[in-house]
Length: 254
Image (cartoon, rainbow, N blue to C red; front, side, top):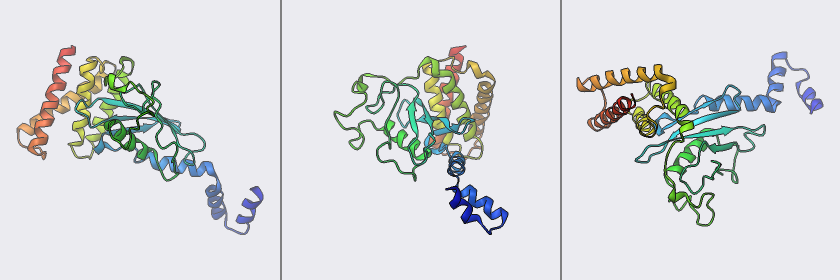
C-alpha cells in the first residue's frame, strides 16, 4: 500500500499529493462521512433530536413517537472503526413495550441487510417508525420477538433517565424555535408534558432553561391571543392546550 501510494503521487504538485493521500486514508474518509452526517442528524419535523458526543464516535438521540401518549425515548448509538462498512451499534436507553426491543434495550435493525449507503439518520427514522407501529405485519414476525411479553408492559421513562430526557427535550424545543416552523415544537411540548406527568420534578437540574421555556411559552400564547401568530386555528388549539397542561404540571410540582 505504501509503494502504491508513493507511485500514484510521483510527479504531482504538493497540494495534489496531499489531497490524494488524504483520499486514500480510510480514517480521513470516515471522519468526513461522520462530519457530514452530524450536520443533518436531527429531523425536528418528525420528532427526532440527535447529537454526537465530543469524540464523534457515539451519540444520543431523542425520539418522540407518533403515539397518543407521546412518550419520549432515548437511543444510544456508537460507531465502530468499521463504520460505514459495518453497521453501528444502536440501543434503546431502557426497555420499551415493543417485540423487537430486548430487556437490555438492544434492537437489531439493519444488522443483516446493512449497506454503506445507509446513515445514522436513516436508522433513527426507521427506528421511530418501528416503535410507533409494533403491530405492523412488516415488522412483527410471531416467534421471533426479542421481547415476547411486550404487550403487558407500559410506556414510561425510568426515574434515573428523567433528568437527561428533560434536558434533551428542552434542547429540542429551543432548536425548533430557531428558524423552523413553529408547529414542529408541538410534538416535543407534548412529550415534555408526558414526561412531567410521570416525573413532575424532572426539570430541577436545569431550572434556568425551564423558566426560560415558560416565559417563551407565555409570550407565544399572548401572540396567539392577539392574532399575531401564523399558526392555523387547529394548530393554535393544540399548542395552547399543550402549554396549559405543561403549566399545570409545573405548578403541581412546586
